[in-house]
Length: 279
Image 1 (cartoon, rainbow, N blue to C red):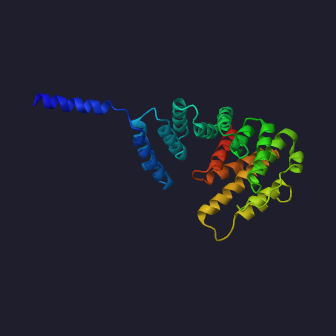
Image 2: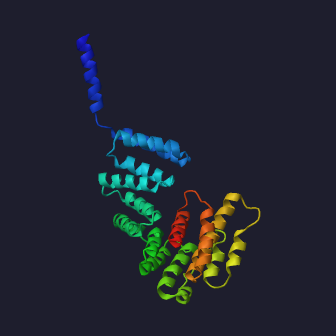
Image 3: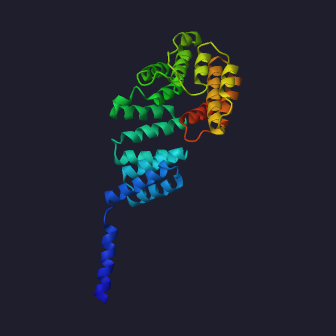
């Protein structure tokens, strides 16, 4: 009996000493991704934590948990996981991209740009479409580089009013509103309400009240109406700001932030912008 018991204990110790199998991590990661896709963030986080506990050196596990923290707006926790991803795999391009976004949301614009630049070294084909780097350039005061980034985005989408507006903001900050208006990027049709009215506002063809009126469409679901009012207030905020009315700018930025948008990058940008202007 003593020999059998000793062998059993030895077997358990050997099992504990076995390294985590890659397939075990991958299975947990797949389950977590499936849960996250269904909006079950709590379940996804538990599975991701299991994956990390199984192998704390797994870049895959930390990248996954970081993206879940990102969805939960736990920005510092997300960055910590992306740090560990990169420590385990310095060529994990997406980790740099995600970390850059999280740093932007914390107002760390220079650091965000560095991460975006590293990501684009690994994936240069993504450069024209990387509008998030353009926004980081704007807040970092690197307006010429921001302008070029938004001009490059025209190769990806010529129907995005937001791209034209951020290009306008970069030019206006450096060369004035008149030059920005003269060089306003031409776009096709942005189907989001009230983006075409926002475009005409920056083109000098409409007034701020026209944007608000267009955003308040009748017979619209509460969720969609909130999104429309968010866009209206965000872009009225930056419009007033670039035209020198800081009081109205902050009022509209506050209202944009109050229109809470879940897992919405531009809502995070609005919050950052509001916080910067309050300071």
